[in-house]
Every structure is written in structure tokens, then in C-alpha cells.
Length: 196
Image (cartoon, rainbow, N blue to C red):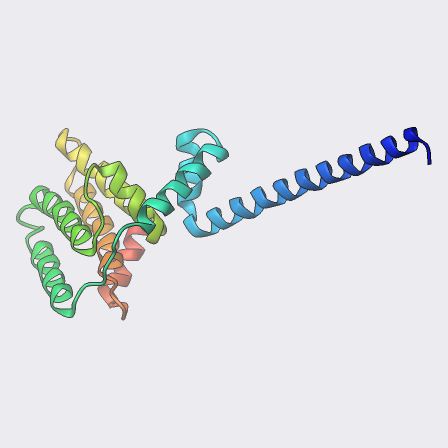
């Protein structure tokens, strides 16, 4: 075999290996995209829209996973779960007399529950991002409740909007509380949140 044939063979092998590497990279990216889309559900699309590219969104979602993976998230004791459930019941009972105050209290109670579970409670966007890792199905409820609360601060939310905010907070609250047996009122809260 002469030098030209050997050189052609080596170039062919390198080209095939390069092609295999590109194909492996491509399928690896698709697999990663699929995994993240499955794990984060609607939050995947929300993050892509917010950041403007799938690559940036996937980097952000992997960063969230890593950050939350380093947290010490704990289950509530039965006593704590009972205390939080009672606090929510008391809060809901006050809605008719003070809807604006109840929305503020619902947000505070959700933050308290997050802190008790081990989530950092810095700014809202960070809280929502952290929640999206373990509870991607309800993070949109949190955003919706927060948006209504902000509209209320500007005097632009009526009582019906405030009711919806409380329902949205309730869906997140139940998820964070990790209510095992779905209660009829929790099911109704999920249905109402889906309608709003």
C-alpha cells in the first residue's frame, strides 16, 4: 500500500469518527432536552420563552436542578403539617372580611412553609425557580398568584381576582404541604386554578 492510500484511509477514518462524534453529541442534546422537558413540563416552555433560546433555558434549568439538589429539603412533621393546615383554614375563613389582607397572608404563609421545608425564600423569581425543580406542575400557580398580588398593590385587582390568587396559593400550598390523601376542597382548588 502506498503513502497516498494510507493517508486517504486515515483521513476517511478520522472523518467517520468526527461524524460519529457529531451524531452522538446531537442525540445527547436531544436526550437532555427531552429529559428536561419531561421533568419541568410547562416550566420548560416558560423558561425558553423567558430566556429566548432553548440552549440558555436548558442551562438555567440544569443550574436550578444543581442548586436545589444541594439544598436540604425536608418533609414536615405531622405536627408542623397540622399547624400549617390549621393556619391555612384560619386564613381562608378571614377572606370574606379582608380579601386584600388574606392574599398578603397567603403569600407569607407559603413563604413560611417553603422556609420550613428548606427552600431559600429570597426574591420571588428565585423562589419560583427553586419550586419549579420539585414542583413544576404548580409553579405557574405561584406566578399567577404573585401577579394578582402585584396588581392588587396597584389597586387593580377586584375581589374575584383576589379569590383566584388565594386559590392559586392554595394549590402551591397543598403541593408543598405534600398532602397525601387528596381532600375534596384541594381537588376543587386545583379545578378552580385551572379555570383562571
